[in-house]
Image (tube, rainbow over all chains, first blue to last red; front, side, top):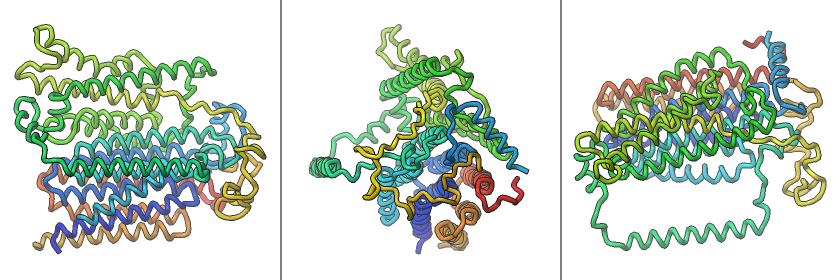
Length: 116
Length: 371
Length: 102
């Protein structure tokens, strides 16, 4: 098997790994499972692009695509963590009539109580 | 290579179907981002690295983060205790009329595509191969990368119109937001989503990423002359830097200031000046003076990058937040077309995967604040 | 295939193996925390092996630098994201009520 064939086989394996990880994202009973989606796609996507950079050497700038994808995957991971990780994000039964600064203060105080 | 392409095509179809079939918006957004990444890989396989760069930066990157952020804000205000109602799409797939219509539409679209494909394959080879035409004229264009030459020299009119459309979009977005702010209670950060204090680890990561994003943006902009790159991708990276700063609680562009307005219009303004000034000496619109093409293209791209970055960032920050209606306990009526029946396909079962458990982490208890 | 290619193949194969192990862990582990563990550690290690395996195929030093920056970036972002998600899960979940969390 030539080296080119090795690269292509590795790319196919990674692609199936990515699609298989989707199943967990689909099924994941906890919200934390869905948050891992960004990590899965970021890591596997960058690996795939980097493999394609070597598999298609006549196309210029594929590594730039890898770099941009890595950067944006990092931003997406941070977006996931910030938006879906705060105490607000739990599907709680609290009913506030006016969401606003009071909600934020109440939550941060509970945060402090939880912390020790 | 063929198996990889087949798997890629299959993955694209699965992701696309998953976006439409998800009942949960979060799943749909995640699958949309997957679709974007797979599409970027497809562009690479089709030997279009500029499109792959744009798709990774704008399609999967910025759009994905924008959708996630909107969904996150939506969820922060989610007050209805019924888990099926707020962040889930209505399930119309059970209605047979919708199904039949969708089937007819799909078959017609597929038939039209097949017919046009068949006719295209029957036609003789075209006289002009666009690639050779571009390469024959590229020495006059001021850059050495074909795509940039087409975008900013041969067809620069299209680019001008594209950026003008973006500008109109953000003007409308800002205008709508001002209206929403004044009509509701105008506290200082009304409409901004409430983010808690970021953990220190996150702040360090943001501090590592921000300069890297800006440097990569300038690199992609500069590289546009000789290799895949360009103003749109660099602008998307700058917007990503702004979004990151916002997520890390660094207060940027929170209000529409004069500087922001200047930055938003800078791209179109400079582009128009460069386009119109040849007309003062009698030459047609959008002609670059000889010898200056490279410099002018770089100037235009630089201004466009700033503008596009600020436009995309402002769409993220300045656009009006979704108006969440006040919670109504009786939102799900017991009868009528929107009711959730006790049995049948739309029911909430008492047990099973979709049930609302009585205990456990996802349970709905009446105690507040069990974090 | 030259000797260098054989070494590259070895590293790339190990990297893909780690990716597969990570995905199997993601699908099969019973608990959220173990799943995060599998995904973060195995996948990033796999990416590292693939990057090392591809370095000899690069033509300029700038390409090698880009590869390594990609890897370090994904490593940093994955670690931070995994830690924060796991931390929040511990805080929210009742089974860890008495444990110390950061």
